[in-house]
Length: 467
Image (cartoon, rainbow, N blue to C red; front, side, top):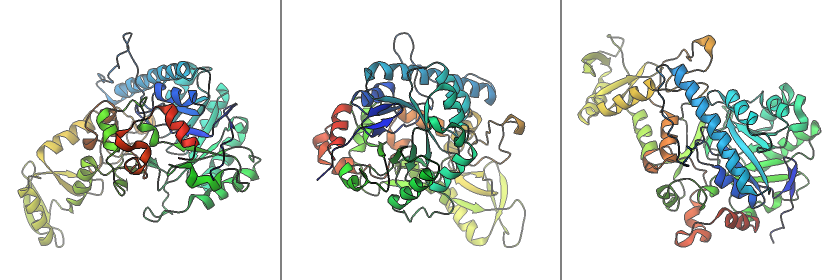
């Protein structure tokens, strides 16, 4: 029998222990997160380039006119602050004084601190908590404490929490509202998989969360909730976690299921696509320009990256060792290959992959002429959406002249471009389509039979019932 859900103190209020996971670039809006809070839980708006609106309520396109990356980066920061503030205002109105509203920030996004400060300065009383992951957000506690806002670091191991707490959070324990354990194998979007963990050997989250609770208890955080995120679908599968003395207070975060609601801002074609996914359609990969692992639907966008990486060879501009076979490629430049690799290269050229792009390891990848133009344009148009980007070599560190100092990597992609595209109506099969590894359950779950799309309230009630 599924136990009844007791309320939990989150960000200063007693609410259902059900949290809407924040998704970047306009995918969790004030309307959807406000509805989640109105239903009694915690809604989370995106603080990562959320949409803003003109006086007629139309979305303002995020177009960049700056001639330099630095200029475009400042435009991006302004868009992010304006969007975050407007979405917080909408969420506040929609929640009708119920639940709580959090904002989600990625620490590795470009200008993360500036954006967070800019939003919090203009949303006093509207935002109750800040969820933050994708990196080690040491400054998060200090910033949130200065505004009297709770903070929720996203971690994937007890070790990461210990480092963060010892170095920074010990100063602002009062405002540490909870610790989000995000399963690095099952969560959608960017994941905190470490070099010590095997991407194809997932570990049980229970002992990992027990270790986290022990670490939290050691510093007096016995009553501070752990938020379980990633891989959560039916709460009946997690009933042993509820009222569990070994784990202490636990809340559950849902990132993928809220995509398919009436209030969700994603396009109809995206919603319909979610209902067609099969088990195994989600791929844990490392193509992201952040260099983090991330999980996304294995669609044409991901397959293109997989195939592009396969068309990769070591080459030399002169005869070296066994690299003795010359081939003229691209703009009539001669490269030397081994005999075996020269055959592969010639075959790819015949297939239309006539352009070659260098990687940071000095290998080359073969792409079509149109793809080469697209990649070079995307790299040139960079607006610094990440603190460090392996695709464009942008870094928001002025001491390093806003460069990572490394060569650009054509095996990656412009993440800002594709996430803006999918958030604003482009075909989701041709864009990066983040999703958790349980997204196939939309098709399998009878709740969604005959293409049913629930309201947020209907979804929250369904989840609270165990289903």
